[in-house]
Image (tube, helix red, strand yellow):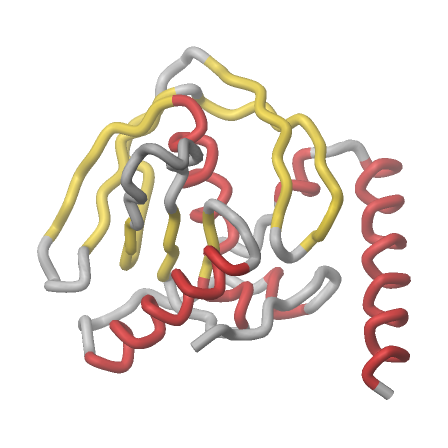
Length: 174
């Protein structure tokens, strides 16, 4: 089931998410809903707080080539356990900050540990776009948005645009 995506500024997007204690059927349904929501948006990553659930759960799939099979990943309690000194700059966007993009610098390579939907511990090294995406989504779990990496002026300008967008959408629904 597709879920509504929260738009910045929303206080839930700035909250620290709680650890997931166990993998339940409810969590599996939530993960499936998040993947459907992400693909339909369309996006390459989505964190639970973006749909109003304050749990440490993210989904991502950075496969962009139509000829390549999708690679949906569901990560429960993900954390970066190591990162490279080498940095990468990507133009990032966010489903909670539609149509706004900015260059953000992050470690180029990260090692991430997480629990999968079977409760098994997983660990993988991510590089390039995958590394950027997984760091961006983990940031959401800590109440951090990509615009928090920007200067105050640019961040305020984007926030004002989002306030205006939310007002326009509210008027359309009324």
